[in-house]
Length: 305
Image (tube, rainbow, N blue to C red):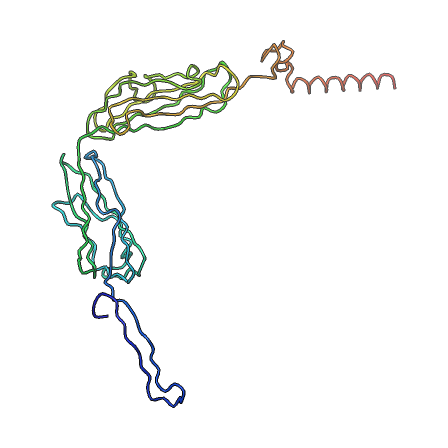
C-alpha cells in the first residue's frame, strides 16, 4: 500500500478457452496501515525516596497490527539520575530490531541514588518507524534525606523450651539504612502470649540501651529476646517497633515457641523419688546388678553340684 486506508481492485483473466466463462474477475481488497506503538505505563513518578536508595520501574512496549521497527530506546535527561538497567527489546543484540505485530517487549528504568536533595525529571524515548516517533514517557523522582529502618531477623522461632525455664537469648538488630536520623519512639510486646516473652534493651553485641533511642545514618544497635513458657504447647507474640520512618512507621517481628513439660507427667516430675519421674537406677548400675546376681547364682550352683 502506498497510503493509509482501504483499497480494492480486481484481477481480470480474459480470453480463456473456457467457452462458458472466458473472462474471470477476482476481487482484491486490503488496508494500508502504519506501524503503531503503545507503552505502559505512559508516564511514571518514582515518588519521594531517600538519597541513598535506587528504585526501578518496568515499561511494556507493544506493537500494533503490523510489525514495528524499533530504531532505538534511550533516556533524555539533565544529569545521570535515570538509566536503563535492562532492555529486553534488543536483548543481547543492537538496534534496530523488529517487534512482530501484536507482540510486546520490556525495558526497566532505574532512578539511581543522588547526592543532592532535589526533584529530577527525564524522558524515556522510543524511536521507531511510527510516523509520530519518538514516543516519549515522562519520568520523575524526588530525593530527600530520610530515615529508613531495617530490622533483622523479622521472625524468631525459639523451638522447644521447657515450661518454666528461660530460653537462650536471641538477638534482634535494628539499623538505619537512610541518610537522616532514625528516632525509635518505642519497642513493645504484643500478641496472645506476650507475657511469656521478654525484651532486654541491653542485650547483644551493640546494645540499644533503651526501648526509645536514636540512630544516626548508617548506625545500628541490638536488643535481646527470651521466652519463658508458662504453659505447654505452641505460644506466640510479636515485637512492635515504632519509628519516624514514614514508609515503615510500625515494624513487626513475629515470635513463636513450643512449651514442653519435663518427664512423664507424674507428681514427682523429674525428681528421683516421684512415681512419674526419672529412674534413680542408671542403666550401668542395672547391668552391674544383673552380672553380680548371675555370678552369685553360678557359685551357688557349683557348691551343690
